[in-house]
Image (cartoon, rainbow, N blue to C red; front, side, top):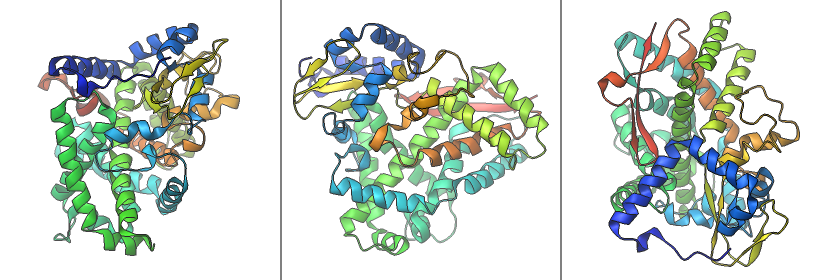
Length: 426
């Protein structure tokens, strides 16, 4: 494999738009990515030519070697500044991760997400009975926000609403949530994003940084830490844009995949009808959680990953000979293909939430990374999405449907789903 010097910034505007369009289309059609991944699994030599890992064994080996295949590949798309996801292992990474784990420990995501899901469903039923609503802006965005907001402790309101507001103001909170959505969108868009999309992300990143800078002392007191201001700001900004938007997008993708599988949806609705209280039924919650993970496997928010190659090394693709990787190049990680590798996942093409993963249990969470760099918030995110899905199942006599009669039911902003119009019907 030769080091690639290609960058979308070097392309003419028309060619760049075309490349971005192809990238977005592939992200919206994961079945195509799975098909390409299947070819790469059968002929790993071809993957080696292009620096692509598709077999489960190859993908795991790439992700287990962060010094050879670096997360710094994210750096150019992290418009709000450096954070864990784009760092190499080292003292700064370790300290920031320890702080993140400390903040995650204060959360009660299941209780908070359950409470907000129940409140939102009741509000939608009371105010808009039979009418369509936006699953993202009217439901998921708020369920995730209420579950994650306590990570800022007593500074939460100042972060989301600014210094001048004391009351719970959803209009100000919505402005904050839109800022972090577009900052996160750049990470999903990647380097092929059009210049207007990137400029929008940069404007929102500036606003987010200013917002956090104005609340730094409040955050310091809430977190009870003595870190330098720039350390607090880096972590507070990173926590904002990576946690909420990615979880919301994952939740939307889960519902999209579920609605494509009416048999699976009907089965969950039937189980909900049989439960005396779906919110306290631990067996039902465990079943829904299994479905969340399986739906994410079929439609992950990050189906493809890229890693920098800081020094000469070799890529193990599964072929008898390793592929040489020159310093300065990049490798592609076809993570969606790895989760469908029959060598690691028996009957991988079947939708089977209750599958016994055996020794490959961690592969089930590949959409959150793998090994020492796996996202420490993965279980929190899955728990929030489980609560959100239980909320949508809490009306067992009402079936959730897309509402395309008002135009397109699903609207995309690049690869990001920005709107999903749905309604409850009989």
